[in-house]
Image 1 (cartoon, rainbow, N blue to C red):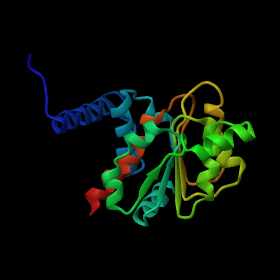
Image 2 (image 1 turned 90 degrees about the vertical axis):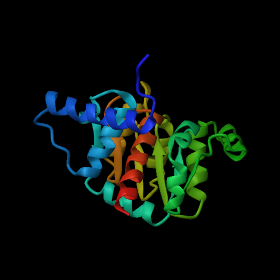
Image 3 (image 1 turned 60 degrees about the horizontal axis):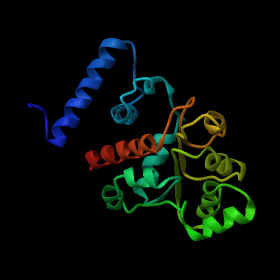
Length: 210
């Protein structure tokens, strides 16, 4: 059987195909800038879903805020171990950043049980107690996003793309309306893989700029 086996070549061809499809099927479509283009195309690459051209929302200042936070060595907090696993932590470390997920932390498990809330909510509570510049990355848990917003927290930025049918769309609309620097998935779609893809796209762009 004759098929591509080199990971880099597979990825290069995938992105070329994505660009060709956009040019053919959405010739009028324009990205705001090269970094937004990189993020949206990487999410399409991750999901094979071109609806992301229309549903991935960016606040006016979020790319600048995220870039500055990563360059200052921020801490990323994810709502799932899947998002944590998907983020390129070697590249993250090159910028002096780290990534944490508290969903299985014994303190979170105990706090969630005591308060009668989800572990995702308790994980946000714990993260907010820590020192350091924070970026929250949510791909699965609407309750985590709701918790962050109801507490009036002011992280440097939020990537809010929870997937699902109960609270997911509403939590993301609340993020859009919050005034926080944010990237959000309008509607039901999202996922931890999408959240990780957004972060990685920015990290790759920053590496290229060095």
